[in-house]
Amino acid sequence: MEVDYLIIGQGLAGSLLAWELCQRNKKVLVVDNGKENASQVAAGLINPVTGMRFVKSTDVDTLLPTANHYYQQLSQYFQQAFYIEKPMLRLLRNSKELTTCQKRLCQSEYQNYLGGINHSDSNLKSEYGLLKQKQTGYLLTQPLLATLRKYFISKNAYLKAELNYKEITLPPLKWREIKAKKIIFCEGHLASKNPWFSWLPFQLVKGEIVTASSIHQISQNILNYGQWFIPLDSHTFKTGATFDRDNLNTSITQNAQSFLIQSLQQAYPRLTIDHIIEQQAGIRPTTLDKQPFIGQHPKHPELIIFNGFGAKGSLQIPWYSQCLADNLLNNQPISATSHILRYNSRIAV
Ligand SMILES: Cc1cc2nc3c(=O)[nH]c(=O)nc-3n(C[C@H](O)[C@H](O)[C@H](O)COP(=O)(O)OP(=O)(O)OC[C@H]3O[C@@H](n4cnc5c(N)ncnc54)[C@H](O)[C@@H]3O)c2cc1C
Image 1 (cartoon, rainbow, N blue to C red):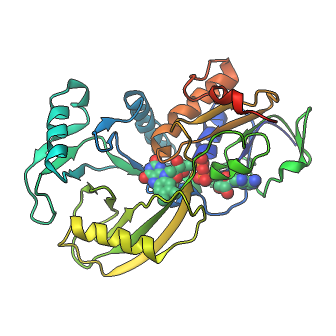
Image 2 (cartoon, protein in one colour):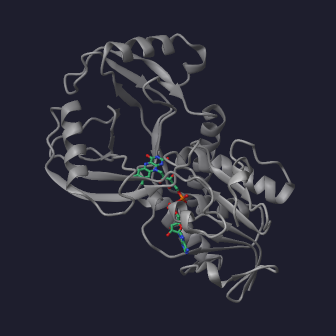
Image 3 (tube, rainbow, N blue to C red):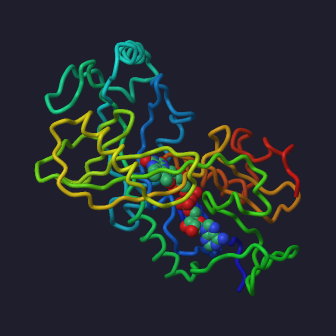
């Protein structure tokens, strides 16, 4: 078998990049070991304004329209909704947060993302008010990945297998009996074990999420109170996510469940939780400077990495899939802030 691109990993990064290259008539083969990945665990939340200082995410004015357009096109193609836009209420926790967000509401560059302050909601703990956020929502990542996997299978472009790095020979590039022009590694946090790219400064972070239900109707807004609450239907919701830099495994813990449920009950005291449906854990492929890792290996141009989307994969991956495809096919440069060459001095292999 001969392909243009061998793509390792069918998380959100590998899937959207493979989709993008297929749309541009390239022959790809996606290889994935079929294990649960960060993308399947993720809530898929897109939130343009975050943090204690209520700042816009880097490049959000470019990334968000691309993500919206991308998910709309996928929905049209597969006749299935993948992105659910829903307003978010951010619970202001003290007078400093209230002052900061009043300042943001006066800034023209925030008008598209912030809708004003609600002064109270009897269901929520909101002494300092609730900031209405716009252009927020969540990606249904699991159905999207399952749909794309079926699509790749139908095009003979998917192989369920574990890639052993020792089986790769180069040049010319070959893995088992498959010849490829390039290999694009999209292994999420497992890239830290990739012998060609482990020099990149990943700062992995474990996260846990709980899915639960209530017999009463629940709020239909996304809530942000340091953690988040996402309504999935009238009675079921997700809440998350923890941040743990020390225990980099995918085991679920009672501590995380208790923390998430207690935080939610403090913010939303009237919510009755009847049933914990599921708890999941995954590892975010976060990087030292919080920017993606994209580009070809400095010594082996056949080897490319597409990774490092941290906690913002749903927002960033559509735009960066297009950027990498433009680079591979039309020699368009990759931005200096996402190109791995910014860490070139660390390379040892
Ligand atoms: C708890 C949690 C909550 C999150 N919440 C959000 C959120 O609300 N919004 C958001 O945008 N992002 C969120 N994220 C981050 C999001 O999950 C990531 O940004 C994104 O999913 C990364 O996708 P990826 O394809 O790079 O990695 P992954 O999804 O991990 O995919 C990598 C794939 O490569 C495969 N693979 C690796 N090595 C090999 C090999 N040798 N052979 C074969 N296959 C291999 C793996 O099995 C996996 O399928 C969250 C993450 C976690 C853990």
